[in-house]
Image 1 (spheres, rainbow over the protein chains, first blue to last red):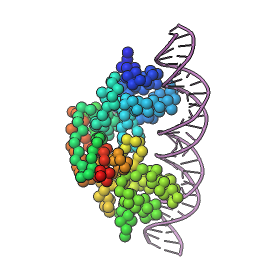
Image 2: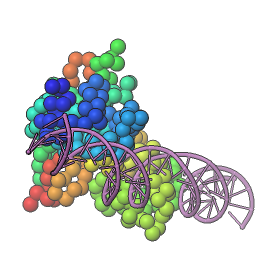
Image 3: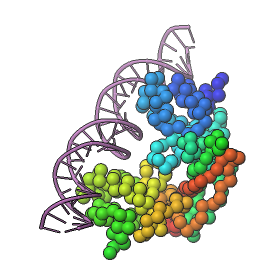
Amino acid sequence: MEKEVEIIKAHGLRKTPVRVDILKYFSSKGYALSQPEIEDHFKKDFDRVTIYRTLHTYMECGILHKVPSEDGLTRYALCQHEHVHSEPHAHEHIHFSCTDCGKTTCIDSEPVPQVHLPKGFKAEETSLFVKGTCDKCAG
Amino acid sequence: MEKEVEIIKAHGLRKTPVRVDILKYFSSKGYALSQPEIEDHFKKDFDRVTIYRTLHTYMECGILHKVPSEDGLTRYALCQHEHVHSEPHAHEHIHFSCTDCGKTTCIDSEPVPQVHLPKGFKAEETSLFVKGTCDKCAG
DNA sequence: CAAAAAAAGCAACAATGTTGCATTAATATC
DNA sequence: GATATTAATGCAACATTGTTGCTTTTTTTG
């Protein structure tokens, strides 16, 4: 069984064309995708609402997660370690946005550093957003 | 001259009711506000577009900055150290979102920790988003 | 106070988010 | 493998937000 189908099944979802294709698209791209990017790519194949709902479903299942960005455009990225298992993954990772190629990637290899907060504040979840130059654009 | 008016003037902007009122609203609230929150509060006084443009103007001037959030709702917050001066402030600070009261505040008192990135990545700007319980809800 | 410049308000439209419902497709069962 | 069951899709429709152009009003300058 294909990896994509495995993931879909592992979350108790039905295997459908949109789902498989969107999942493959994320895998092939490897960086965070915005809803317009996905829509444009599949506009001739699938309805806008279907794509919207697929993304929602994937978010609920923990297959995708939202990547906050400063441009206001919501992006989605594959949850790493979300190969077949169904446990929702921790969102504790670094989001890196390249100012050169504009792509946002998730960096799971490095730990999110410990933050010190003022008295009274209690951290439960930390996410780090880094802007800079990515390895591919480093030249 | 009022503090709000001073800030407006210092950026070469004209003093108008919307601008003063919105700035005061931000000061009084002390946490990040979304466009709907601002609109709802001023809907009887100002046009939606005027509010939209005021926020834009304030962003350009460095009076406000966008606060990325995971709910997809864009929020704006006063740039600290943006009292009268016109230099754009560094965005290097912590955004804290309270899971209890839902409010997002900027924490400027603590430094953003150093991040270690994989080979080839170069960080230029780091922003940290922390979810948890704020000092007011800690009780 | 008048002229010049900027901002506000209004209309209009684009893009995105969201829901309900009829139709179609995917799975489980025989 | 056909069929009943259940879920997913497509479509229509509408809400919300983002965005622009243009006219009127307001603010500032002289």
